[in-house]
Amino acid sequence: MISVKVPASSANLGAGFDCMGVALKLYNIIEVEEIEKGLIITSSPDDPSIAKDENNLVFRAMKTVFDEVGWYPRGLRINLINEIPLTRGLGSSAACISGGIYAANLLSGGKLSEEEMIYLAAKMEGHPDNSTPAMIGGLVFAVLEDKKVNYIKFVVPARLKFAVFIPDFQLSTEYARNILPKYIEFKDAVFNIGRATLFASAITTGNYELLPAATQDRLHQPYRKKLIPDFDKIVNLSIEAGAKGAFLSGAGPSIIALVDENYEVFEQNVKNALASMELAANWDLVILEA
Ligand code: HSE
Image (cartoon, rainbow, N blue to C red; front, top):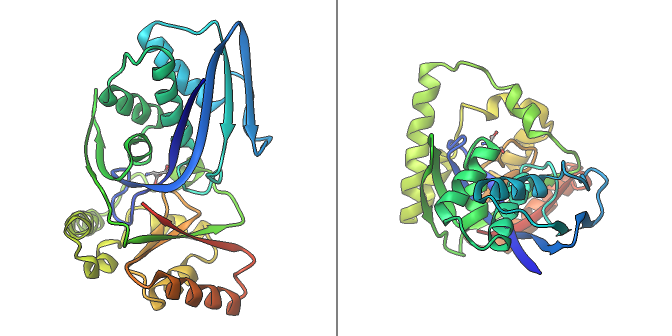
């Protein structure tokens, strides 16, 4: 049996819409083995929204590899052990896609290179900012081209923590992409280019005091935050508690705050603030490392 451990991921990181993302230490495990015939899919916890047939996303990702290399198992058993919450902006789909591709490549004899797997995953998801860190870990700057992903991976020091606020509701990425405008103003594009560039420099050189400015965004958050009733409250209470920037995780609805030091103090202050604003019942707080 082949077992693949694949991380959660957070895309965009403020200004880097569709081109920046980070793997987080929260994992799904995908177990696969060839069987005599048929397709058996099990998952724990057993969520009814996870398809158990050929529509299953892990299976579909595996099939892209089998089609690519021209080898098919006689039958397939897939067991999914999921820790990444579904439809919360934490890369659960990318984990299925990247993990499925990685597992299928192992099962079929390892014919694809890492670059080829990264490309297949990004092509299947449509953007590389979750699937690339899910495949190779780290914080990734990535651009999906015609036949490849151009990317750079950076390993984030453990001292920087990712405080993840997870709400008690789901938000489909498709819906959150469809509400974005077709055109944006030139000044907003300029705004984001500056911040994304600043973020890349600040994160890789450890200049974390620049992160609150570098994580500002005008491409997607102004539109998506209307779908997340407490967005401004969570961002503001995080900044007041000392976060180095707070932003939507991917398409949302989770929100991430960057915490440089004294994360235990941050966590306590934020929990107190959530309780006093009567938000504690609706928002979980989990502190993760990249
Ligand atoms: N960059 C993507 C988005 C990530 O914001 O729509 C979501 O999967």
